[in-house]
Amino acid sequence: MTTIVTLLSMLLNVLWFAIFARAIVSWFPVDQNGPVVRALDAITEPVLEPLRRVVPRVGLFDITPMVAIILIIIIQQMLVSSLR
Image (cartoon, rainbow, N blue to C red; front, side, top):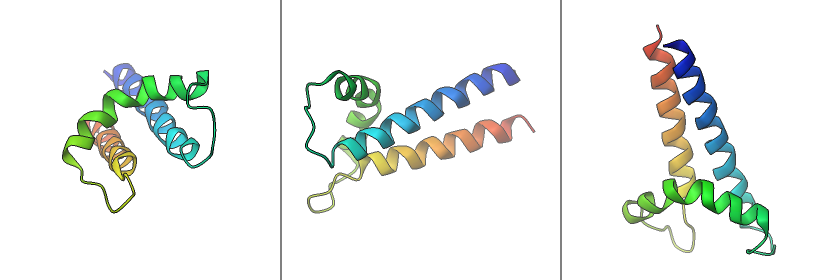
């Protein structure tokens, strides 16, 4: 059981990092068709797209990545607490 929780936690960490990296990259004028940007989109879009339907934009800002990271942290905490 602990191996599964550890693996899930590691995958959630990768997703957290990818969402954070995508948010940072969006601030800079980079080639949106580059391999790194496409990889980040492929990893994060299945999580962010459903959230965009629920989370409203705040002015010009898309706060979906922040909401996704908060949800990932909550899920990780629930996984860790399930081991105790």
